[in-house]
Length: 122
View 1 (cartoon, one colour):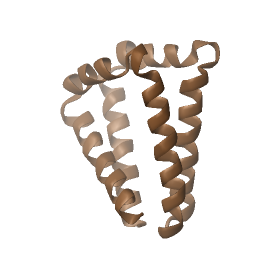
View 2 (cartoon, rainbow, N blue to C red):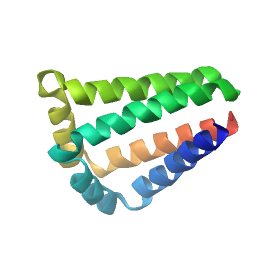
View 3 (tube, rainbow, N blue to C red):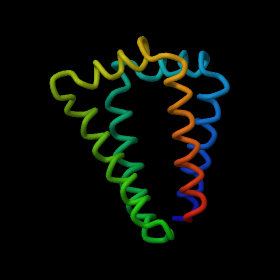
């Protein structure tokens, strides 16, 4: 399962870099992906990735960090599925329409750091 950890960490680094370098294009891509019709797919993929992170955490040196990321991913999937008080809709609206370019770049930096930490602790 180390291959999965490498895949996730490289994906985090690549998407974080794209968030920093191509902010406007990435925002347009997210507007197409984060539509109402894809909510169940997003939730199912978050839960699946979370479960795979938890399973593969046992083969990594940074067990607790990767386990924590897996639990966060499962919670995110559950949050998207149940959508309490339409909170996910409000967050999606803020993220796609109100958040500034600096916010996207901050999320990109965070993704690069998470990906780098994961790759060093595999």
